Each structure stands twice: as structure tokens, then as C-alpha cells.
Amino acid sequence: MDRTLKIDDLLCFSLYSANHALTRLYRPLLAPLGLTYPQYLVLVALWEQDEQKVRDLGKRLDLETNTLTPLLKRMESAGYLTRRRNPEDERSLIVSLTDKGQALQAEAQEISTCVIEAMGGDLNELIELRDRVNALRARLDSA
Image 1 (cartoon, rainbow, N blue to C red):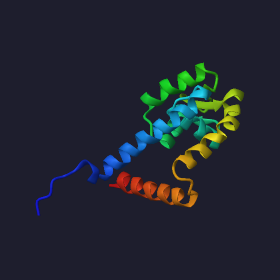
Image 2 (cartoon, rainbow, N blue to C red; image 1 turned 135 degrees about the horizontal axis):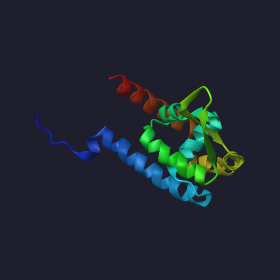
Image 3 (cartoon, rainbow, N blue to C red; image 1 turned 180 degrees about the horizontal axis):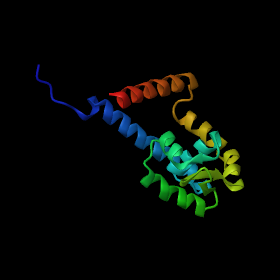
């Protein structure tokens, strides 16, 4: 059977366009905090575990160093974090939250509520979807 491929049939396009929709959703929520979506992800990772090596933070966020470094420099200039040499390995940097970066966590709490509501509000459904997407990513990473 010869079937014409359609953009709406592609899972990759569904994930791609959903990612763009999520980024558009976050933009006005993060704007009052002066954050971009990638900066928000860095903060969430540091709220989860402060004092991370840049390399480890990049792995956690799936970002290359050449993408992460300018992002961290801008966040450091804004006063959200500091970067310092690792005393155990001078070649690596450790990223730490400042008080200002730590304080944003309380302000950002409302963002998750807004995002969950925009996605339909069914937390169990969203957790299941997240887990399925994570499993897919793991399979793709190992392929």
C-alpha cells in the first residue's frame, strides 16, 4: 500500500511542536521573573541539587558546554548564581545558587500550577505522559 507521509502522522513532529507550545506557555509566566525557559531549567536543577559541576549540570539538562556556558554567564551577571573553580580539579567549575537565585524558587512555585492547569489539570495523566516520554528518550539514547 502506497501511502503519502503526512506531517501530522510523525511522532517526531508531535513532540517538536508540543515542545514549542510548552516554551510559548512558559514565556509569559517567566517574564515577570526576568527568566528565559533554559534559565528556568538551570534554576530548577540547582534547586534540586545546589553546587553542581558545570559538566554534571550539562548532562542533567542535556546541554552541551558551549550552550550552557554563555547561559550560566548571563545568569551569574544577573546575580542568580556563581561559578567558581573546583578546588579538586582546577579545570572544572562549580555552579552555586546565590540568595537571589534561591529566593526565586518561592516565586516560581506558581508556575507549575499554571502549567498543569494549561495542560488539562489531570496530574496523574501528566505524570504518565512524562514517564512514557522519558522511557522513549531512554530507548532513543540507547539506540
